[in-house]
Length: 339
Image 1: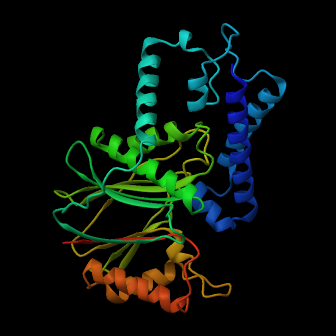
Image 2 (image 1 turned 180 degrees about the vertical axis):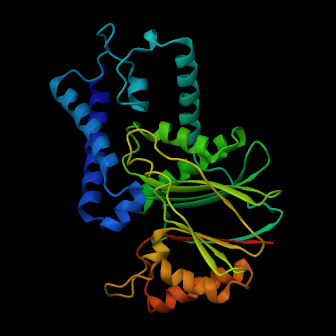
Image 3 (image 1 turned 30 degrees about the vertical axis):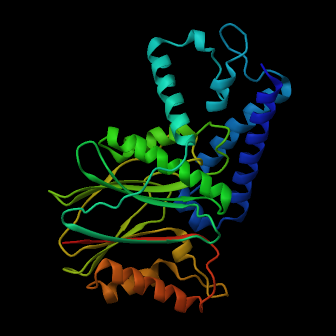
């Protein structure tokens, strides 16, 4: 095994560990509960344990040794999954086909952006806004189409911002455009993305993702949310407010894949708002944040406006709250109205 791959893996693992431990130290408990989809950070502890075991093997000189033949595991395999402990020669035919698929997808992901197009969705009008805190944004939103013709809405927030977060956002966009046309389920897509990034040495941070599927014929909205902020639905017919809570931990915070699907039957005139925390955590310069309550108040008051105008009202309210100060985090809004 080349020493270069060992040093590359070690550097990536140390960086990942640093990011996760810093996140544990500085993130308020309520936000941890959202992103971990749990009262505690047990999923992060499990992930850190795997990282520490790999670093321990590197220190002992046993990293990348096949458990079957005791030869070196293929370098390319270790770059994709640093927990690999079996040589390619010991894979079954099915495992080799799966690996080939993942390698092809990995190459596609690294090639960069594909163009974004917002489709016209029958029965649903949509508007969106995104503003980076720096030149490059770590927020990602998109409108995609599933294999069965249903429409998908994705909103993701890469931890941090700037160039590194923007590069991660770009790879996510490519992954979604590659995977969604081959799938009928938001959960299947997120599971593939988690598998692709979980042990990849180039993925040293984490990302929250809300991914919903809208069936125009039934108005059924199916979604999976990996540690993302709760979506907000206002139903004017009854004045009811519905929160679309996370259904599992963020990608990069969990060792396995523990996200599930939820469904909501939308009704005519419902307003759906998805957002990143750069919106609700906008500060007035003191200890106060605009919060979901601030967002909900604006939606309740102006829910009859078209989505484009409601987005502007929300942005105006944020600007008034922050007294015009520049946002310190990337901010993205998606507003949908059932027709």
